[in-house]
Image (cartoon, rainbow, N blue to C red; front, side):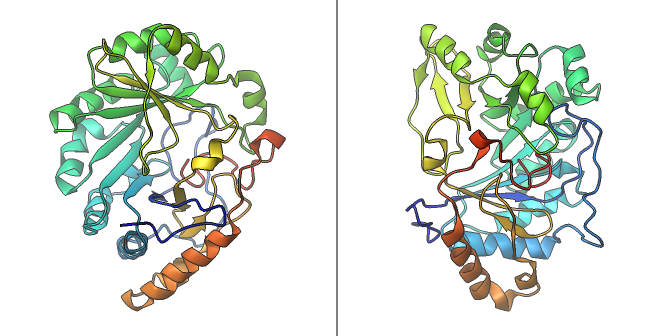
Length: 329
């Protein structure tokens, strides 16, 4: 199905990132260093199971091929397995993914797979247990590693691992990461540290371009792969001697936004056209019953007319994104 969701720059949107909660139990230095704090939206509950069912149905009907469930930490929702099953009801979706900190995977990943989950991204910023604890504020490294093993045991052929690239923290550890993925079908994705409203000082201290990693990969014989239309923004590299792959997400690179194919819905039902945009378009008033699907699709399509050609991170404009758990990264 061709996506009916097209913006003024002729970009087509096949990919929805749906946040189901903004709560997280980790305290990562680049996201929630002081721990989770509610955003002060009075009496605003997270999307219910039926609301999630309706919003994903509208996107699927408009040609969306991939839904990624995000947070916060999405597995903190007690009904998370039911959420996966509700999204799975849309037969036209080719992929249902989750981004997780991994702490519940060892226990629950088989249930997620059985409910219809097809892909997993796990956040792991260091392969050293002590450094992992220093970054996340949680002594859960072994638990997360066990969770990745459990994902393979549950039948996932590949697991993606997200690593936020930080100067003098992990940018010099490429060899360690490559050794880890040599015999494991893991796509390790280095994500450039992005400036947020609450993270400007850390950004100035720790930001390093993904080009540093790309140059090292090319020197070592890694090959750049072709991107598919519902893929995320990573540039992916492979090597004949490695089971794993390396992905690079570089939002500060020229023309990063030219291939944008994803939209975001927050945990309280606002459509966000960009992670670093200025505001959200409310959808929740059209999620109360099944009779509003046409209006819902129309509002989403109309909103796309206002999507800007690019983000303004280069100018230090982070929009309303105070931290990455706010909309779902």
